[in-house]
Length: 273
Image (tube, rainbow, N blue to C red; front, side, top):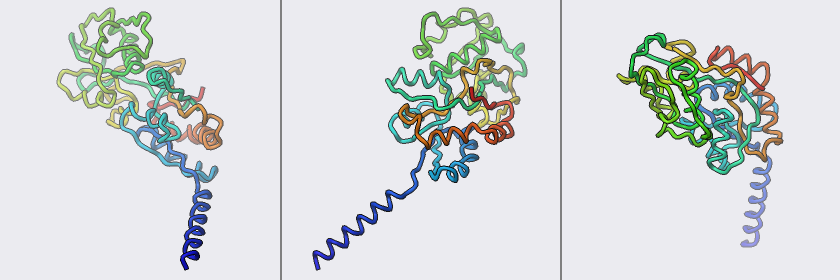
């Protein structure tokens, strides 16, 4: 009887292992609630029907953790960042994450709830910007392009830009503007503070905050070379995996591009390099 029970348990174990072997693989893709989640939800069924893989969307609320999750194998890809941000992450963390595809332009914009145009900006006004190196540079460059300040980074690499010494990169500031680097996900909310006249907000958080593409927009990033286009990132060793090549094919299709344009207008513009 004991031998029979042992045989039965072994047989059940083998059946269980066989079932696991036939289970569909789940591909975890990390993203933000805007614009990544709607885009991934749009292609989810097509991807699963065409590939046989399950697609699971994992949401993040900040820019600090999706690359950590990718590097640690908790997710297989992420969609939230531009290439300079990924390069900075790789340099700072000694990782080798890669860009699998260029997806869309996701412009920073200068928003205000106190003024309708830059000429109304008063002396000493406070402007909130991103506090990580690559995005802080984008924000400062917008202010420079608008003639509000002049910047010079010298020989400092983007990854080494320090928000604590932001004024050291500003060589001219005729209106004595107070440039305040804060966490990217807090900039939209800072517009409600009494002394904040402009917040340079990433499109992801601008959409979440209901700012849209034109509401309260007083200036916007110009990126004709698309150097800050958002990418689909993965581990380097996965670049030729079938689950990834299929994901890229569907995400960059004409139908997906049309969905992006219809959903986000000029805030998010499809671009694939």
